Length: 129
Length: 373
Image (cartoon, rainbow over all chains, first blue to last red; front, side, top):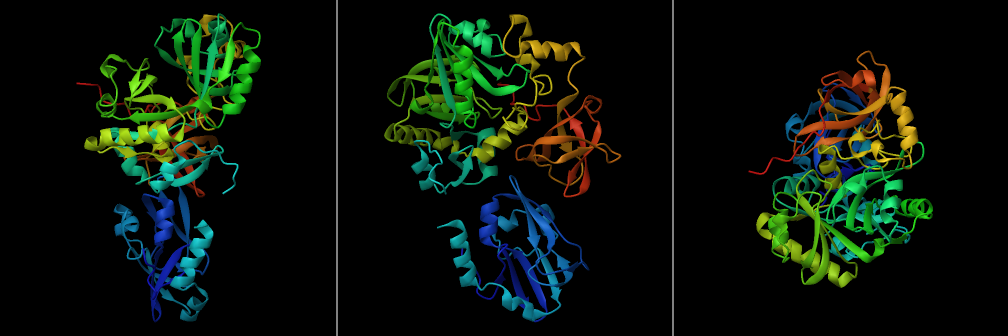
């Protein structure tokens, strides 16, 4: 699956799609593929302060649990409640299934994150193929 | 990936199918192909195919075979008829597990142990050392067989297309010899590790034969929606059926009573390795901890190794295996807890990332296959 070029990516396999100070966050197609069938998403709460590189929730597949790391610092403005009952939406379309929306404290923070092509390269190196 | 990982003859097939591979006890094995939940459901509702060639096969031959088998396994092999198999285990003198096994009686002087992959060398060495004083030959045939498990309510119809043996005549935990995919004298056992009906067949381990039979089974099962299934589904299927996994429910520090496997342990058959220690445990009033089934009451998934606590937050035990159960659609676990917490519906908590999450003791197996109509 193609990685949207307007998103930025973390080495922990989250994506962030920002428009000015507001942004959506999810996990990458590579992340959902490595996890397998996702059955549980632990969402943050609206109003939570999240910090770049810090855990804001978790996703669980049948066989594994994986923490979610915030790509940026800011405040949670919305969470995708649909994932509580239909967590498999992340498997079907990881790049559309946002987990939280946030208000960014400093949009320039995103510049240190990976661009689509660099993330793809990173994944290839990490998986060795 | 280190080159030291061992591979089954079907390794290229798994890779061609795009399976996700993992290191399982030193073996490069498929964890899933199309997806764990789909594979799990295929076995519960149709049929699934597993490569279980990493499992080991130890054969006993000679006049002293039964005596040796009785000495090193806890079930009573003297009750077996030719063509019958039984679940059993090899124990250490202290009554804990070397491994769990399936004993097959080929003839009065000929028995086969099917053993776990991760414990193959340990098991074989143990058997050799323990059987040395009996009049029998012990051989490790593990590398000579590709072992395929065809499991699910449609397993019989699938395999029947490929063999001249009347499969409906083989009862659960019995076996027969016959031609499968043109291969004469193939061992066909009605055994498995999924809690479902099914068969395990043992064919020559050359790549060509292994691939051909694999493909013929897939073709035969196509009309029933057969799926190749990986170790992921194998684990969730066995967990729903509450079947033990070495290193989790059973190990060299857990005894037979704790694991709740006493019904497969025949102390009355006479002395065997581990029997004295087990009698002492019995005399002392039974085990202190026991394996129970847990179902999560509140939202959360118990995982292997998580702590179990009483309602006041005091640590009382450990999760041996925990996972979402794809067919039951519940979050379940097998856990070791003290005797006082084994009553059904007892409320406990599982610590999930520093939070106690409510769970209750439920009957095991969690899943029982429906009776045939």
